[in-house]
Image (cartoon, rainbow, N blue to C red; front, side, top):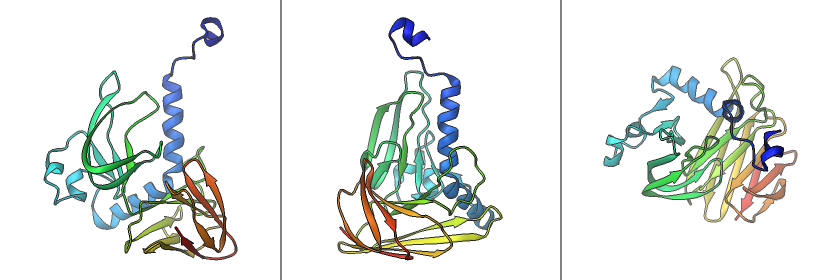
Length: 231
């Protein structure tokens, strides 16, 4: 009603912000819950200082306004009322989870964010499990999961473990790259899973169908647990 009367968009409310980030958390639950289970076994907290993940980067010893959420997500909270935030990106090709923008580290970044945005960067060589549900935190995480592959380097490998609600392993995904060839395998039960190659424009593949999206190439596997991909 206010937008119709003034011709301006409605302001962002606290409810809008809560809804937005609650949905984001629900979709990230396969990753977050797997990280919480790792914490039980290792004692390393899910929300950890940058120095824990990057002990050889001297800059990370002094960072107190950003953190790693598990091994693969960098978070830089926005403390200023005007949305201004400055944060450090370690070495590598990092990708903003929400926008797909790439940051090449090591570098410092200064940005402005509104209430529905935050610096949330995915580490290179990451296979990130993103769930299908955004309305509840407890669901069958492996069913309909999208595993998102970020900046996999030649010769590198990465893994994503999808837990059940009781803490067992429902499925394990692994991605490896040799030259322009990428192999992605799924062990376990993951009905209707999909693979998103973030920031990739075109590929050829055996074992699935390819769709181009705004975020990269989406591959929907056929009745197979292995995808062979050529960049």
